Image (cartoon, rainbow, N blue to C red; front, top):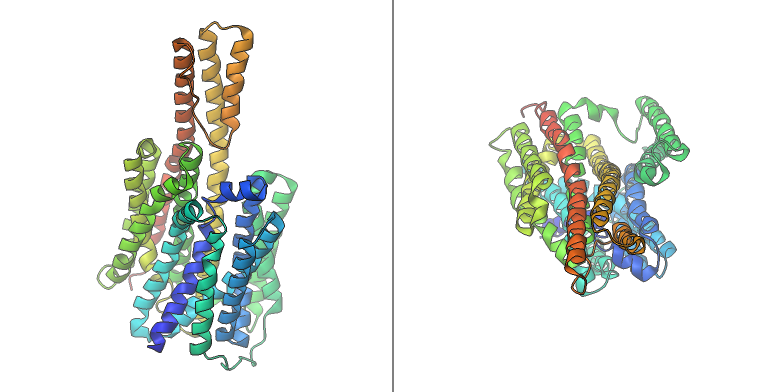
Length: 509
């Protein structure tokens, strides 16, 4: 009974932490309207969560090991609950950012400790099952974020995307106080590697900041280049310090294990390509097809459904099929989904649903066994460190996805708008309208191209020739904008398949 409660605690901890990495995506326009801030400024509410989560996971986990993992877990849950409450009550961007920062500090403790506590609850023979369960929870929660966010925003309000965490954290605190060992002995004999902690924070903060802000700052701008230069220098010093430390933040021997190193790469790639759908597709459905947040959320829901179905199947298939073949098959299914999204899937809702399901199936097949492959045979300090590292790498994959796909999308949209303007100018010129009327129509086209949502004009009161011209312009414009999204998925195909190639180097265990 107690073991079941503690496993439930760990599952809930992982679920709320990963859910909040993506739950805001669909709700951003609604929050922007209520708080009166632009989407570029509001994007910091997403960025601050990812940056702090990535930067503090390793040092906070190490502190928890020294002062008691059970205490650390409850402190993390408390911080997450306080941050969620503050975010929900925010009446301006500053309060929202503070709330999200506190949430993220809590997540940096709760996420890795949930993994290590959960794994330590069972003996080695049962480890495959618990790691698979916790790994499935990670992928499923991240994929569910946009759907839950859309549903909650549509039927309640955007504040409830944070408020739903509050009763969960209260229940977790009660169960934790009653069942965790709060008098757990401290590891007083081990000192904190303070230099390594500072260098890891600098490395991950500058990496995160550079990736998240590179598009708006400019990839070759001084701030962006400085972020990456400082990141590289700090990382080099981190490796040097860790190689000489008697009690390192991250035991470098962890990466001597070939399966862990390859699995780490797979974790990054799989999360990169999952977020490429859970972030980019809701943007397409809300901005280009003009669906509301609920409609957009339901159209990406098949991704979560497929993960829920196929993750456990793949996790337990490890007993019969070598892990590398399972992972290769998963990446092939993701590639098929990406190919479909790059060709015809975005032209109809039914095809979008099935393409999303295919991507979710592929990700589920990868995420089910990957943590078992990465850490199923590790023990003691290496096991704990592996969970912190894989937690950070998930965030790196998410940040890479945002940096690469959002940057690519903006570039593609600029090309699409230029093509649309050219087509509109040629079409209007053929009507031989007065100059003032032609300029008015082209001005209206420009306004719609720059708007957040693409909304078609009402042409019912216009002469047939003009109505047909405007309808044709808008049809071509929507097609150009759709192609901007399709190109992202087609260009990504070789890199999706690269994940399968990387997986082939796993040892057969």
